[in-house]
Length: 247
Image 1 (cartoon, rainbow, N blue to C red):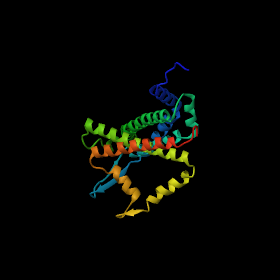
Image 2 (image 1 turned 180 degrees about the horizontal axis):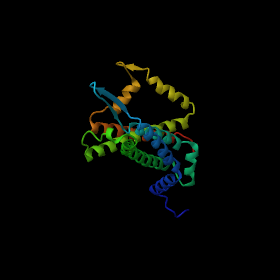
Image 3 (image 1 turned 90 degrees about the vertical axis):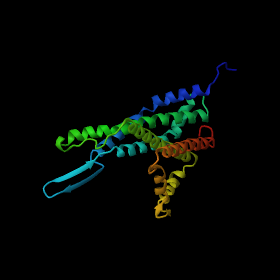
Image 4 (image 1 turned 120 degrees about the horizontal axis):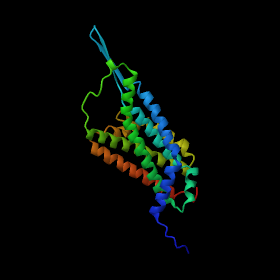
């Protein structure tokens, strides 16, 4: 009988540290996709112009929305990749079970999503600086309203939550794919099919999108997203229990 006391928290921490070191390619991919998003964002999110007959004014707004959208896609994709067989078998280098496997995965995804969300939100400043140097100084305008620290913190938190939401969705989808390979073809058809199910002249997919991203009360938005994230990770853990050993 071994005298070593196997502790769940120690196992999870070891697996988490291993993944942070081994999955460095995840963060390299994040850098590439965010740089690509920044370059696209420099084209401008929207543009409008007006003239009084003597001069013409063109107003172009710049946001980090494209970078955030790319980061959500990155989080969704990498959450699926983490559930694949090759990544799962790496955990067998440790004394582990399905619980420690899921907890270490969730910790890694949360860390990655938080890093991705913060850098995506801060990329707005990078976009402004690049536009400032690329365009003529005389035609460049700065922020058109005062933004305090609370607004920035709310923006960072909201970005973290929506990126985490994408990561949780990807983790559930990845587990479903591992249970049944046919779902790789069925799920996309189901998702696109939601766009054709109409309710009050709106598709089901559109209503789901508006449920999360058009919420006016920030507290309600936080509750919605956190509950969905917890449900997503919890469902993925339940799906893992249905998988065979080392499957």
